Length: 214
Image (tube, rainbow, N blue to C red; front, side, top):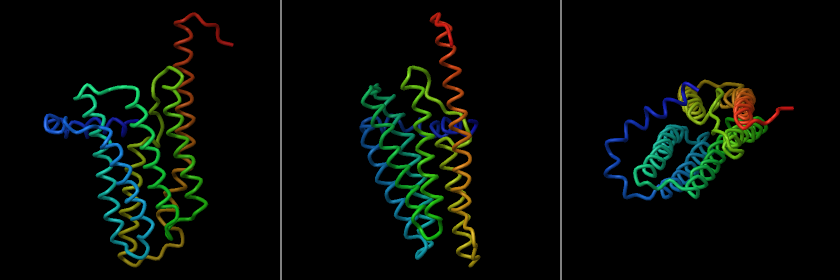
């Protein structure tokens, strides 16, 4: 949750440029982020034969983070907040997650079963976060595996994987495998935390409206 707050500091870096970027439609950046994520997935997939692609993957992850930050900021600057924007902001992001996760999963450096399970559970984390808003309470951001945390863990794992490959360290159990195990464990903690947050807000809303909890 504390790492989630870093995204607002990241936003502050781009505030001085908003007057120059406000003419760009935010949806374009959302779709462009999907293409960047697709490129990131390919970098991970082909990295066993070309380790330098891991560095490119790191760069592309930063590009995606920037695009994701800018689309929302520009929408606010343009006064362009609308229900359609909620869809465009959320759905392409899930595709981006899938492309990135599957790129790692199907690379030689990752166990396919671990990666597939982790990918499904990462999507479940995102679903649980949005579930609160869908039923009329707040979007949930609790837990150790939010979007910002996920970016940071992938960046660290990618850098470590690159260093080990360059130094010729042959690991029986790769960094990406440990990453997926961490995603599997932390995703369940995150889902539980978010469901608990949703239930707490439901009780508060029902209490204000005079509902009797059963």
